[in-house]
Length: 141
Image 1 (cartoon, rainbow, N blue to C red):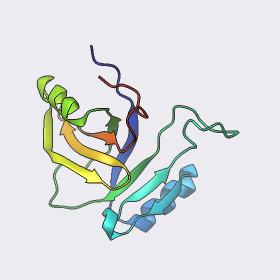
Image 2 (cartoon, one colour):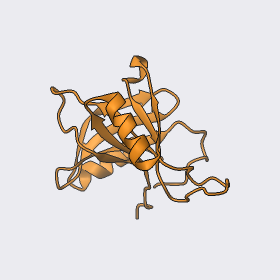
Image 3 (cartoon, rainbow, N blue to C red):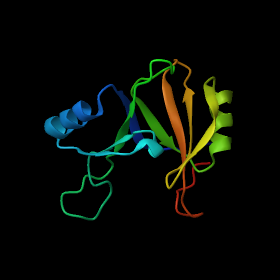
């Protein structure tokens, strides 16, 4: 049996980075950080101090990001990123369960290996094998 794989991140497209950053900062108090072109102009969204021992930290919450909408790219909708220990094994499980892996994994420097997929209902999500030392990530099966 496969161990539960946690949602570790969320993603959404944006049309205007400054407008999106301002909205989420003003509406929800999120800390927004614009990355440069070398990181695909990604906009990091810190929603909470995740699993921190700091006072006021919200355990179990996730952070996320926004990516620039590209009219020629398919399936640009809000989605979740699921953390896995073995990306290739998770890709095989997705396919065996009736999903479709979209392309080949890509390395995100300092983050890990990432690939998108559609589930059995046609929703786009992603898998992430974090760039951590062996044993730092809970067993995902």
